[in-house]
Length: 114
Length: 150
Image (cartoon, rainbow over all chains, first blue to last red):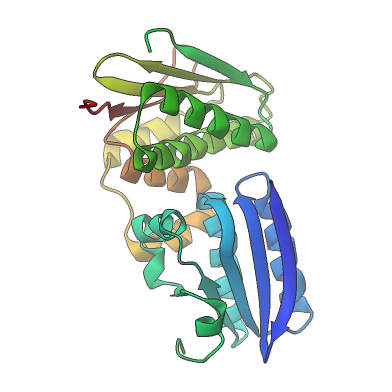
């Protein structure tokens, strides 16, 4: 499994469901999808990483880029993950303090993480 | 496991995944725990990404070499590139494992991906050495202790 990307709408939030492995090979497709979402006017974006089996620093770079774009335009970008192996890379890089990481899409879209 | 496993890959992003898969397979043969295998997968992936990106960035078509070896005490992985990257080794000698702060990490991701990849490796690998190869490339040596299986 390489990378799957599906977008759905939950209230005012655009939820990008990501599955598979995010690395130097697949990260460009994720970046393109996030740029496309932002260009289409989505200002509240949730990136659901529950289906992600692997995430490396290249993938983190794409997520940081999307966060910066969202913040620059007054938007929001949140992440969803409850998987220890994914949360670990955010922890060791200190990025868990930069991103709002919710345990579920429901939590990310309920406004509790403002 | 007494006999090493060696892998040579074209500097192509798709093959970084191949290296990760081999790393997991070899680490399982060695008998590392699932938690350590996850660290091996991420660290070997980062080191290979750095090597492949260095080749692509400098237009070097030579193969990137990855070697796995184990003795009774340690599981050792070497990733060697043929790209000129003396500045990275110099930076490593200066900083060692004293890696980035949180704020600079996000900035570094945009500015110097190679340094970030190595910083991630440094946080995962108990014993990490970065050196120049005789041909002018970079060797990243990563080592994990093999716990006694009782």
